[in-house]
Image 1 (cartoon, rainbow, N blue to C red):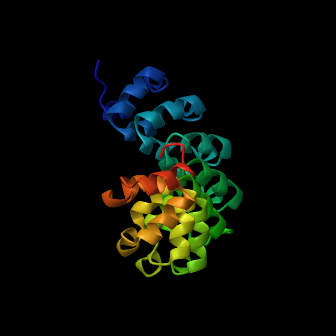
Image 2: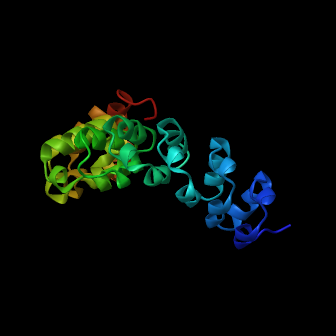
Image 3: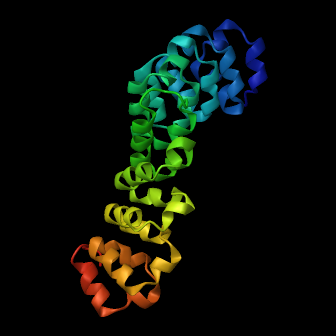
Length: 232
């Protein structure tokens, strides 16, 4: 039986309290969650089921649910989007935010810019997911020292390093040391420099998998890579 979301608005109290019926309505439209019974909307397991059907259903969860740090963190582990519906107090609690970005780095997208310990939070997010670097504050984005910390936390963050700093060999080598795959994001001129490639491969043999063909098949390079990578 199909259940249209708008039907719940005019449904009896019994149906609004019917778990399966309401979930079918939520599956049709997340807005149906608004008309679920108070009991269901306060049932953490039910809220989680609805969230898995459509993340936006959390918009209509009661304030006490959105203020529950353990529960919101549980949802964040399913999808970072859950953070966007957390209470303002949680969004501005650096301890909670740190736990959240460590669970899902992309939570950083919704973290207030003025939250306490913002830089520490950004670095923790990047460590979890390099693409979280897309959401760092401008004041950090323009600091060489920040990017050195970032690539040490996650070498793949090199993808997001501003062009002015990409040619910085210290940043590139720190990134490669942390993750050989970072080689794919180094300055193109450096990637064709035999001496530079040798240095990178010596730091992390996995870098050879991302080097130009002319280096990948060389015997000397393969030997160098084997010293620091079981894959080479």
